[in-house]
Each structure stands twice: as structure tokens, then as C-alpha cells.
Image (cartoon, rainbow, N blue to C red; front, side):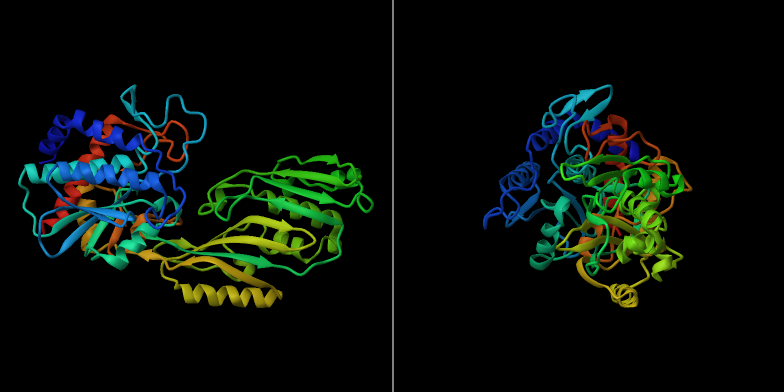
Length: 464
């Protein structure tokens, strides 16, 4: 069957690429919100194009108030769902060719969204068409749910779930193979400290909760601090080998720029946190004069990424240990705050995480504000949706050892409940596809492989 499906995709190739080109041509970054266009005009325009494509193929389609759209195969009451999205992140600079013109070079398909997630939209749409062409037996309706706000909060799927029936199970082709069956919960807070008398005037570092900061800038009172003495006090182990830079401002104050290495907040162990490096330098140089906040960072967070010294460490047998990233610092006369990004194991509840964090904050005499928090997402490995999709992946790829795994990040899967998983389109060991970067692309052969896996996955879930 996989050979027949692949042959069908190859026969539809030119038409399929024309449809993908029409979607890629839309710069569907979130825009100005209005009553008619909740995420801006361009995401809604991309949605309209995709729905017309589905309608052209004879499928029943519906625009759900420009939040999302549905394309249906079959009329059974029970349905399975495939969740994909048409919004994109900004193209940015550095592209070899126009990011909004589908380009073919060296057996690769280039354009913003070809992997994330317009290409998978087209793969699922044509997969439904091929299931119908081959008259594969279905007991459930297949619903392709096309969203327009995955990149900035998945508000599209929240709206869909409030206004339309939620499928009994399904997947999102917006992540990695073999299959992601668990996603840690997230718990983001601003942790606040009292003001103190220190030689530190200002500190700024980091840009987001979910990025290990690669730079931290410290402004020190030049009347209290000697730049030469400060330089002499710096230990290599405090900076992981990244040498700070020093300069003076017009008032004679000392500016210290500390470097590190960026990484995603879900894998903080892969980075070198510049804020932590700065705190270690200051604590070593000034001792108690560095203040409570710096000692908290240097000693209670330090290079740990599991929250152990804070009493937050917890793990389970499915998703491993809690991870903690110090993403930002704001230190000024007005405020002293740290942005903390925690990803906690799938078997811990949000209520338990909040209680543990509250206990930690009280122990240190601190206050905090939760800015974002979510329960974990977990579908057991022995569930039918995991077993059926893994069987399809193994059948198509020949990889009989492939297994489901968990991640610290989040996907679209959690938006519609506990029976959804993330399934493709990126294959393990493949070349970087530059998702969210310049020259986003996918090899033609890998795209066809994904098309076949996606199609058989839909048929397996709907054919019970």
C-alpha cells in the first residue's frame, strides 16, 4: 500500500506544489487583530486559500470565524483529527531566495513554512484525497483542522475546541518523528527580590523566558569598584571560559559585559547562562556586598538545571527531571526580578508544581508572579493512537526500533486534549531544515516520505 500511496503523491506532485506555493506566497505572520480577523488579515487569507483548495477537491469545508478551518473526508459521526497551522514566524534576513516564493534547488523545497507548517497542511490534504482515490476503508471521519495562531499561543485551537466538536484522537504533523507522546508542563514566573544597597547600579540580561541568555550587561558604581581589581578576581570556572569585557561610561561607572552560550529554555543544559556567570563574578568579587539576589543566582541556581538547590528537583520514569532556566534579569532602582522558566515532568500536576514553588519562594523570603503555566500533556505508550502511528512509521521507514519519546517543549498536540500526539514531519538524523531560520527547506524525498507516513497514519486511526 505504501508504494501505491507514494505513486499517487508523485502523480499529484505538480498540482500539490502549486497549492503549496500559493500558501507560501502569503506572509501569514500574526497581524493587527480585529473582530473579523482575530490574528490579522494575512493568516485569515492563508486559511481562505487552504479551504478553497479543499473545496476544489470536493471536501466539505468550514471557516470557523477566521480562527481555524476544517476540511472533512467522510460523514461518520466519530472523527479523528489532524491539526496543522498556516501562521508562520517572521522570515527574517539571510535568505538565499525570496522566502515567499516556493523554490526548488538540489532536490530541496525552500520557502517559509514548507516544514512549519504549510507543507504538512498540503501533505495531509492530498493524503485525504489519496485515501479517497484508493477507496481505503474508513469507519471514522477524517478532519483536517487548520489553525492560524500556533506560533503565538494556539488561540485558534482553543477557540475551535470551544465552538466545534473535538475529534476522539489524532495527531499534529508539526514536530518530530518517530512520535512525541509526552510534553512537560510549563511554569513561568517573575521572581522578585527586595532592594538592597550594593555597588551594582543596573543589570540587564536575556530576552525571553525560554532562551538561555548569551549576554548579561552589568553597570557598577565606579566610585566603589575598581575595574582592575574586579578583572583580577574573575575565575575561569565562573565564566566557563567566556572572557568578560570592561569599559567606562561618561560618569566613570564600570560596564561589564559577560558572555555565554544560548540554548532553548527546554534544554538549558546545552547553554552557558551569562546571568549566572555575572552573578558568580560579582559574588566572588564583593562577597556579601553583592547582595541576596546575586547570591541566590550564583549559589541556589548556579549551573544546575534541575532546581536541586532550590528544593524543586523532581523526576518521573516517563519524562525525566524537571528543568529550570533563568531567562532574564531586570535589576534597577525600581525593580529586581528574575524570569524563571520551569518545565516539569508529565506525572506532576500543575497544582503540585505551584505548591512546590510557593514553598521555595517562602523559604527564601521572595514573592513571585506566574505569567504562564500549563499542565503536562501525556498519552501513554500503550494507547491505541501511539501504537497505531508507531506501527505506520515502522512500516514506512523500516526502523523497527523507533519508539515514542517525550520533550520539554510544547507542540500543537496538547491543544485538543489527551488523545493527540505529535507525529512528524522531521525525521531523526536528517539534515537541519532551518525551521524558524533563513532558508527553511526540506528534501523532496523526505517530504514524500512524510506524505506517505501521514496518509497511512490517518487511514490507520480512521479505519478502526
